[in-house]
Every structure is written in structure tokens, then in C-alpha cells.
Length: 202
Image (cartoon, helix red, strand yellow):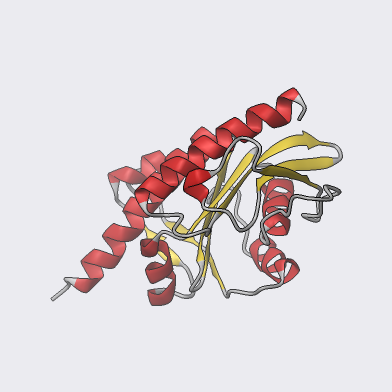
């Protein structure tokens, strides 16, 4: 492994362990990526089919702008193509995809987009706490990453670094894994608030 890929593997394994402990990467679900190069686009993506709480720094694979790899052994996550599309369109340095429950429930309740406003935690998501209408886009699930990528790009807004995939999970991105994590943690709280307040509304 090159030094850059080895460092990316360490960071990706550590973040996967953190999300697994939160219950957001159950079984072998979820995947993370970091950008290694921009021209041409290359990403380090977690491998497919492994318990994300048990990943080692070697459990990553390099993919191109289409999510394809030349590695003869390691298999990238099936969603690698969408990671690459997000990195290219949004200019993200890292993309995080988990299966936390609140985002999936929110997408079910508000399939045309989840509106958030006047909540302090929005500051952690990169937006203002008041008088700032945030709509997190929701797209239908698909096993074809080109279809998902097209749906993402059609609704992309530079000031909303997240995408909800109906009955699937959530994607959040940022300049690096740490920023993406902070945004994801805040967004999960915001969506949980949205779902819970609806459930308990008179």
C-alpha cells in the first residue's frame, strides 16, 4: 500500500468502528470513502461484505470515477459509484454512507424532502440555527448507481451536504472524514427530532 492509501485505510477503519458502535453500520452494511486524487478522480473505499466494526486498514480498495477498481482481489462496496459521483459533483473529500434508522424513517414520512429549520443543531450541519430553511433531498432507492447518481445530481444543492435514499440510508459528505462525521451526527439528531416530534404531535 502507498503511504496515502495506508493512512486512508487507518482513518476509514477507525470511522467504521465508531459508526458500528453507534448502531449505524449493522452487519456488513454501510460504506465510507476518501478522495486520494482529483485528476483523475481516485477514491479509497471500504471493501464489500465485511463487518464494518472489524475492518483493518487493509480493508480498502482504490476506485475510479465510475466506482470501478483494477484490484484483482478486493471488491469495493456496491455503492462506490455513487461515492465517486458525489465526490465529483460536490467536491467532497470524504463521503459517509450509513443505515441509521432516523434518516430512513424521515425519508418515508417526507418523500419529497425533509424540511428542517429553527433548530440549534443545524449549526453543526453547516447552516444557521434560525431563519434558514433546509430541505434534505430524498431519492428513491435503486440498485443501479448510475440511476442514484443521476437522481442525486438532479437535486443537488451545494449548501445541503446530504442525501436520503428511501428505505435504504443516508449519505453525508465533507472536506474530510471528521467534517463528514460531525455533519452526519448532527443530521441524525435533527432527523430523529423531526420524526419524534411528529410521532408525539397532538
